[in-house]
Length: 156
Length: 280
Image 1 (spheres, each protein chain N blue to C red):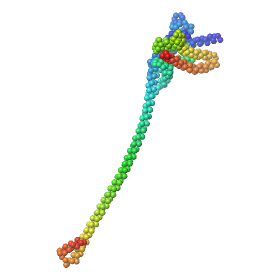
Image 2: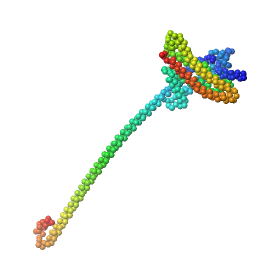
Image 3: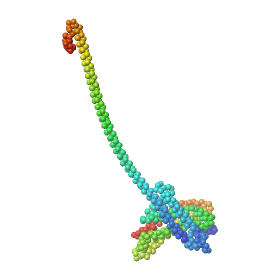
Image 4: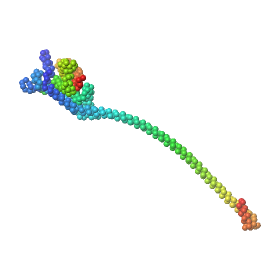
């Protein structure tokens, strides 16, 4: 072992290497490592948060669904009730209309009957007067017996 | 027989000699040829191979990590970034586990120590003859490619860390606080010379043990590779056996080089933590 100036050269080299490493190598890599560690932690926290939010959203969606179902059932029930009501009303209206038309037809029929009876009576009276005139032509003056004839006509 | 053992000795010596540049005995400057010449150069010589390979490997580490740092995204990391992040998280975990104070320098320091020592140790896995042979062919007399088998390199690291320990000890505790930690424990105050001796030895032992542990492990590992490589010259039976041994030792060595880099880093963190700790 003989020592020489290599000792000094080696020390200077070592100090320079340490300085370089401390200045240009260690900090950037350590920085990257720390930043990545933080990013990963943030990412995990975000994932947790997302999961939690998903649970909340699922719960909310379930609630909404239940509400909507209840509402729909209510609407259907109302609609059914309304439909029944409308049918009921329509039935009543149809019955009224039928009654009314029936009454009108009956009134018509009665009128027609009356009219036919009236004309029949006139014709019978005319026939009777004509018959009586033929019988009484010679003895009876139409003028003198006019009121008698009228009376007869009214009686028939 | 005598020539063979002589050449084996030469071979081992050749492999253990750094490429040293300094003042030659005749007064000119140049590369040393052999251990004696390198020794005669004294302190003002430099192991060119250690410096080149250690700086090259350090730059490789910084370049690789700087590339990853530049492109670092917070999104899905690519292959290189993934690898770099894996190492950085490992270092960061080690620092958090052993260092309980606030200091932005410790973690990058630990990363540099770990990666640099690991890469320097990794050179041990190249077959011992490749690089020296190629160097000899191109006219370079010696080439040791594992910088951590050079005590200059390991002590360069450990002494730098030792000075950091001294600096933070004084900075965090004050000169008086640091002195009282050395002088007034573990025994009562009136025995302070004994305390000072004990604690002083303990303090000095830190950088020396740190450097020698790494150096010793790597040097011994390299030595075993060289001894195995010697078997390749002893007939094909020995050569095949040597090949199997080299493979087995290399596999085991992967554990050693990683472990030594990790121990060096961990002890660096622990020593700096102790420097920051208030005296209890």
